Length: 228
Image (tube, rainbow, N blue to C red; front, side, top):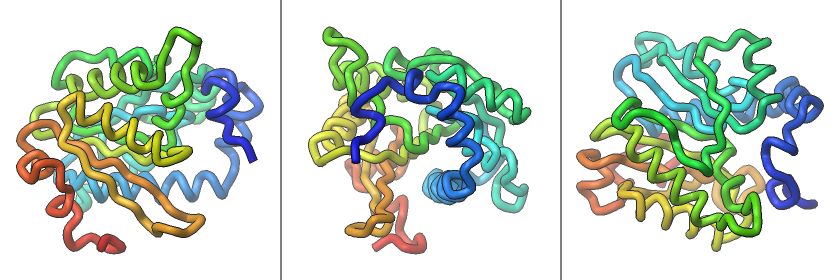
């Protein structure tokens, strides 16, 4: 079965029909909620924070960010970026609490330096591995994205990107671009070797635990449920 990332650009694939189908699927809603909560667990935020939601779609992940209880460090304020007008239109119809921006993350992250405390991205960055045009390389798009993301985060900030690489080459290319941008980086796999396998790229901007350990996320995830 072919992946949509391999055949169409995200803004073309997620037209009005696909965007609504995606948003109204109870299965997708549950998966998105679970992965967003896992990303928040890895972010380990202790107080209400300003979060960038990269590839926010129709706001399914953002709803989780807005719903975090004070005893869990929330609720969080968020700004979402997405390349699909149809997805953002549905987010507006659903009256999500975050601010929304129509933007192609492969062209960068257009925010002032040090704007965000943290960032999440659920099932989005693998789209950058497919070139939009013949003169646009996937690594170039990934480089612009991670450079912009790094600049937009505060010192000591953290980002967690859940993604579905097509193969080990894509996985390496994504990680390489993040490290080249300056991030301390580590990869975490939930349920490895199963059809439910989930991959999380944990990134920190200078001053965080990952940087101190030379890119090792052992200290970041130590003691967390389901992590060896």
